[in-house]
Structure formats: C-alpha cells, structure tokens
Amino acid sequence: MKRTWVKVIAIVVALALCGAGAAFAAKAKAEKEFDIGKALLDSYDLIEKKQYKKADAIMDKILAKDPGNPLALNNKASIMVSEKKFDKADTFLNQALPKAKGFMVQVNRVCSVGNICLAFRPVTSGTGNQDLEPLIKMNIEMVKGYMSAGPLPGSGLR
Image (cartoon, rainbow, N blue to C red; front, top):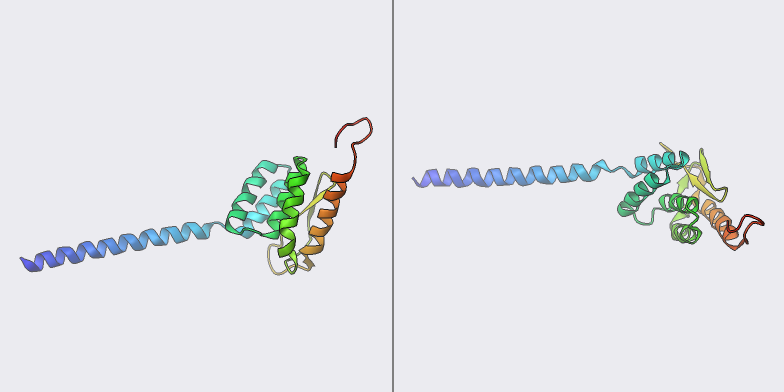
C-alpha cells in the first residue's frame, strides 16, 4: 500500500514539473516572438505609407522592450511632426541623442515627414555605414527651426 502512494506522489510531482516546464517554455517563446529589428522595419514602412497611428503603436512596443532605442525615438519624433506636435518631436530627438553616437545605420531609404523630420529605415542585414548621431542632430535643428519660425503669411499657424 505504501508503494502505491509513493508511486502516486512521484507521478503527481513529475506531472507538476512537466507542466511548469511547459509553461516556462511557452513564456520564453512568446518573449522571443517580438523582434525589434523587424518591428523597426515594419514601423518605417508604415511611416512611408503615412499610416502614422499604426507605426506609433509599434514604436511604443519597441520602446517598451528597448527604452531609449535611438532609431525608434527618432522615427517616433517623425510621427510627432506629422501630428504637428513639434515639442514632443524635439523631446524624443533629445532623448535619442545620447544613445545615437556609435549607433550605425545604413541610410538606404529615408522618409521625409512634413519636410521637417527624417525617418530612417534600418538595414536588414550587416552593419550600417552612417552614425545616427549627426542625423538626429540634423533633425533637432530642423524641428527647432520650424518651432521658432513664425506663421506663414495668409496661412495662419504652421
């Protein structure tokens, strides 16, 4: 009788361990499914198509996984420019600047948003040939220049 109970307890413990292992494996797989590189590419493609709300939602997911990602912050700034939220664009660009030095991108495709802020498409493989820092500095200057400019004659606020 004692052996039966020992066997039952051993089986229950084994099943519990297997269940816990399966749950852990499923959680690890779910975490691996979000690919920041692919998400950056997808969001850039949406910016290019002027689907800013969808791109912004992807940027939020990227920044939740990788806070301070300079490319994501730069491209989010371009979305803010599309919404004429220049102060927010300036904030995102200034958040990106400290991490941008040494962050290499290949500027093979650039999307201009409102002729003010540039979004950059990341490379799909290999390393880039352009440091992101001067590009972000250029965007900061363009946004600041637009913020300090007065309204267009006969057109009201920009």
